[in-house]
Image 1: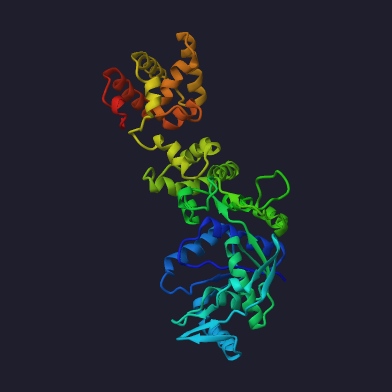
Image 2 (image 1 turned 60 degrees about the horizontal axis):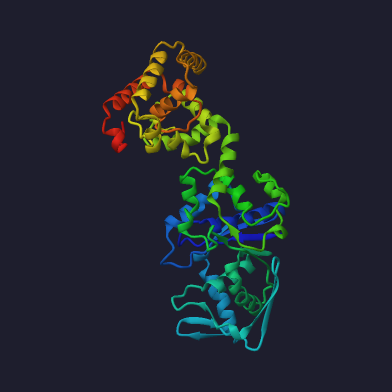
Length: 441
C-alpha cells in the first residue's frame, strides 16, 4: 500500500507551495487507496509557534485535505536519540561535545532514482559530515526525517525540488541505519510571473490570506492541481473526485509552474457561477458584516436576489462588497473618469431630472415596468437610450459598469434611488466641491 506524507514546519503559515505539495501527496494517496500521513516537524523549539500550527491545520481542513494519521516530531526525541546512539555504538558516528555527528564515508558515489528526473548521482566528497543530534539534544532535519520516513513506512517522498540537495545525505543515513529508501519525486517549484521563486511580492502566499480574500477551497485545489500537473486534456475545471480519479505522478510537469493570480480568480469565478445561491449567500454574508454593510437583521430574500444578480461577475466572494457596496451606503464613491464623462454638464442634470420624474410615478417599482417607462421616455425625448442611462448609472452606482440598470434600480428601491438622484442633480447644478475633489456625496 502506498504511504506518503506532508511534513510542514510550524515556523510560518502554510503557503501556496506547501499547499500544492500537500495536495499532490493527498491525491496520490487517495487515488491509489493508500495512506496519507501528516507529520508536524516542530523540532525547532524557538521558532515553532502555536499560531502557525493552528493556521496550518485549519487551512488543510478548509481545503478538505484530511489525513489518516498525525505525528509531532517534538514528541519523538527519544526515538531519534535511540537511532543516533545505534550509529554511535557501531562506529558510524562520533560525538562532538553534546552533538552526535554521522561521518560521511569518502570515495563513494551516492545514486538514487527520481521518478521525474531519472538517476541522480553525487560524490560523497561533496558532502560534509552530518549532524544527527544537535548539542541542545534536538534532532537535525535530515536525520529525524529519515528515521520518521522509515519507521512510518513511507513508500514515496513527494516534495519540492529544493530538497534534491538533501536527498543524497538522507540516502546515506537510510543505508547506515539499515532502512530501505523510498521512491523520490521532486516536483518543480512555483515561480511568480517574472520567473523568480514565488514570494510575497507576487501577492499573498499564505493559504489563510486567499481564504480571507474570498477564494473557495475547491477552486484553489482545482488551480493548484493544474499548477504543475498535466491531465492530458484541455479540461480546466475538476472536482476533487475528478482529480483523485485522474491524478498520476507521471503527469507531473518537469518544469517550474508559473503562478497567475488572474487565472486563479477566473477558476474561482467559475465555481461561484455554479454555486447554489443559498450557499453563496451564506459565504458572502461574513464579508458584508465585516464591512458593516449589514447586521444580523438583514433582508435575506433581498440579499439573495442581489447576489444572484452579481454572481456571474464575481472573481472572489469579497468582490461582491466592492462591486455592490453602493447598495448598502448612502455616501457613494464616484469614479473620477465616470464623473468627468457623464456628470459635468447641466444637460446631464436635466436628463437625470426627467429620469427621476418617471421613476417617481412608476408603480409597481419592478425592473420590467421601470424599463418600459424609461424607454418610453427615451422615445418621447428623441434621444439615444445611453444618453440618459449612462448618467443615471453613474449617479446611482458611482461608476460605469454594473448589472442591468433597471435591475439595479429595483434593488435600490424607490426611496433610495430618488434621494440619490436628487443629491447628484444638486451637485451638478451647484458645481459642488464633490465633483472637483471626488469625495463622497
